[in-house]
Amino acid sequence: MSHEAGWAHAPGALRGPAWLREPTDPDALVAHLWSQTAHKVDGELRVGGLAVPDLVANVNTPAYVLDEQDFRSRARAFRDAFAAYDVFYAGKAFLCTAVARWVQEEGLCLDVCSDGELTVALRAGFDPARIGYHGNNKSLTELRRAVAAGVGRIIVDSFDEIERLETITAEPGMSARVMVRVTAGVEAHTHEYIATAHEDQKFGFSITSGDAFEAVRRLQDAPGIELLGLHSHIGSQIFDSSGFEVAARRVLALQARVSDELGVTLPEMDLGGGFGIAYTTQDDPSDPAQLATEMSKIVEHECRALGIPEPRLSIEPGRAIVGPAMCTVYTVGTVKRVQLDGGAVRTYVSVDGGMSDNIRTALYDADYSCTIASRPSDAPPVLARVVGKHCEAGDIVVKDEFLPGDVRPGDLLAVPATGAYCRSMASNYNHVLRPPVVAVRDGVARVVVRRETEDDLLATDMGDT
Image (cartoon, rainbow, N blue to C red; front, side, top):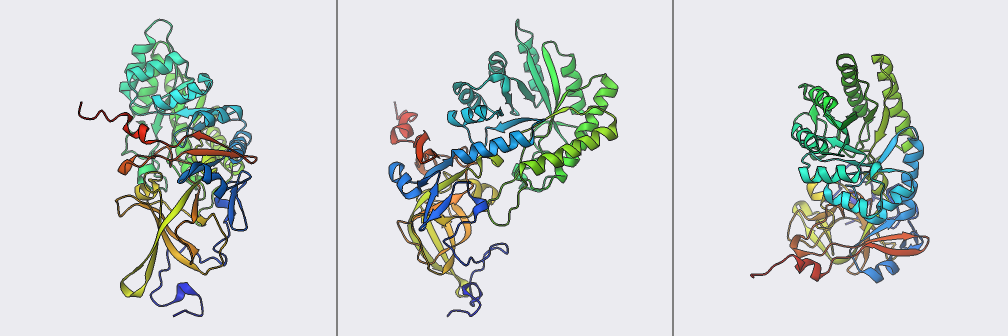
C-alpha cells in the first residue's frame, strides 16, 4: 500500500542511509559526481561526446570509461592553483602509459610506489628527474634501478632502506636525492586502512620517538645522498584541512630542530595528498584553489612562528584528478526483490562485474552512486542495492541507491567516480577477466588498457608439467 508522503514512508519500507534522499527524477544525473562532459540525452549517458551504449557495444561490459578532457582539466587545475608547488600525480590511483603521458604534457610530476609503476612511467617516456619513488619496502634491486634511472627523489621509509641507499651510492657514479617520510601522529578522519600518519602503522619515521630526526642526521652525513627535505602523508579521502594543519606544524617543528641542531636548512617539504572527492551527495570536496589557499596559509603561519624560511612545497593528488574522470559501465543481469523481516523489500540489482573491478566497497565500506545509462524511465524510484557476480555475500558495488522501479536485465548501469584505485586494485577473483579502460575525448574512443583474455588468464598457469 502506498503512503501519501511517498514510497519511502510506507510501513516496512527500507529508507537507506540518512544522507540519501529519494530523488524527484531517478533518471537525472547528480552533476558533481560525474566527469565534466557527462550528461544524459533521452536517458542515454554520454561521456566525451559519445553515447555510452554505442561505446560499450564495441568493447562489451564491464568497462571503465575515462574522460580524457576531465582528467586533463583537473590536472591543470592543480598545476595552476599550486603554481608555487611541485604537483606530483599519485600514480597508484590509476596509471597506464597514456595517463603518464597526459600527466607529463600537463606539466605535473609523477609519484610511483613500485618497480612496476616505474616501468610504466619510463615506458611512457616520463622524465625520470620528475618522478618521486615511494614504498615502505624497496629492495636493493629496486633502489639501484631507480637511482640508475635518475629518479628525481626517493622517499625514504626505514633505516634498512637508508643502509641500502648507502650501499648503492658508495658505487662509482651513483648518487641519490631523497626525502624522509615522517609520521606526524595525526589521526585523519577517514577509514583506518587509509589513515597513514598515526603512530601505529607501517609508514615512515616517527617524529615523537626521535627516529625521524635520526634519519635526517644519518642521511645528511651519507656520501652520495642529497637530502631534500621531509615528507608527510596523513591519509586519503580527506575533506578537512585541519589534519594538514596539525601535520605541517609538527613536521615544520622538526625542520626547525634540524636547522638548530644540525645547522641544515632543508629546502623542500611534501604534504602528501589524500584530497577527497564526491562519491555521493554526502561528499563536499574543496576545489584546488581553495586547498592551495588554505595549505599555503598554514605553512606560511607556522614558518613565521618558528622563524624558519618557507621550504618549497609539493603535494601528491591522485584520486582528486583521476577519481571523478572515470565511470564504470555494467550490464544488469538479474533483478531480485527479497522480502525482509517486517515486510520490507530489498531490491538486488546484479551486474556483470563486482568486487573484482571495484574492491573498495568491500574493503573500505565505501559508498557509491549509480544511474541507468541506456534508456529513459519515468517509473517511481525504488531503493536498490547493486551487487556483483562473485561468490561472496559482501560483493556489493553500490550499497544504497534509488533507481527507476522498472530496472531490468539488459539495462546498462554506470557508476561514477571509479577512477581511483578500482582498476589499480582489480583482481582475477573467481578467474574473472579484468575490464578494459576506454579513453574518450571529442567523440573519439580508444582503448588504453585492453580487456584481459582467457589466454592472459592461462599464461601463468603451468599446468601439471
